[in-house]
Amino acid sequence: MNHELSLLPVIVGLIGATGQAQPQPPPDAPDPRRWCTQIPRPANTALERVAESTDWFDIYRVEDGIYGFVEAKQFQEAISYLIVGTKSALMFDTGIGLMPIRPIVERLTSLPVEVVNSHSHYDHTGGNAEFDRILAVATPYTAENQAGFPHSDLAGEVAPEAFCSGPPAGADTAAFHTRRWRPTKTVADGDILDLGGRKLEVLQTPGHTPDALMLLDRERGLLFTGDSYYDGTIWLFVPETDFDAYDRSMARVAALAPGLKRLLPAHNTVSADPANLARALDAFRRVRKGEVKGLDLGDQKRFFRFSPFSILTSVPLLEGREGDRTKGGSGLSVWR
Image (cartoon, rainbow, N blue to C red; front, side, top):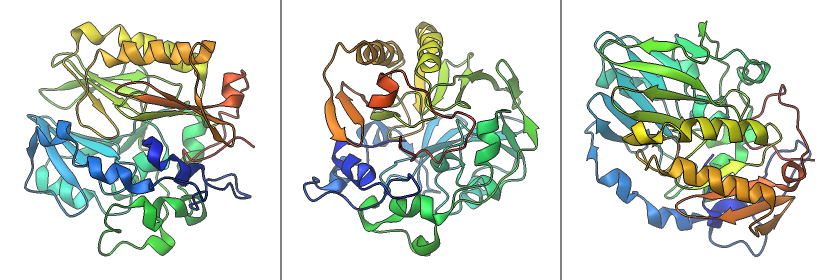
């Protein structure tokens, strides 16, 4: 999940009976659309924008054979990646699911395409149902999330304040939901996905969610980080977040940084500095130890500003409580 501080009140908002964030901002909320003035992000416009871009997806050629699909007009600014080899292609995430993504993928490659998700929050699996070949980790949490998420959970994600210039033409915001999807194969830590001329290593990196994973292209020095790291406000507050696991996962990938050329995160920008992995780990540890003072956002949430990232977490997690990590979650759930 990606959220600039100015937008947080929209999601923090008022909590309904379902435990999901409601779209109404509190009366003193700052303009939730301030993030609109920051797009397109300079780190993205420094790259080639592909002609297949639409009025919803801004598509950038990150490197040869890698395309970043940025949904910049909705505040999540979710990014999915098409990674093309010589014999097959892979979609790393499929976006929020508001607009079809597969037709664009098929215009960019005629190769068979498989899907792997960085984790199973709604904003990364929204387009999964469009594909018939999906690889997934085998966790109870993942299995629960395969059912998709109803409109009642996601209504705030398509409220007027969630967009920069309104929803895209043809989008059904009144009934927006994510569809059920089914994996065709499981993947696990250390698996190699050979696309032909490009090998991607699966790194299971739980913490943000129990099923979080990254993809490592060792030959090219590329790490697809999902929601574990991006330049923005990193969400580490939902009940399924595991602080101990996040610490271990970030320590593992921070050790890879000297051999990396680029991070490819799942929000905001299609490129980030590998050195930020260690910086984020250090910041997270300082937050956890109580060495830095955070901003109280209400509803048990604490915001900690760093640069070029921030951390949003919760009092229960800071106090050492554990949520149910087998129960599914859209990524918007809160502590009750």
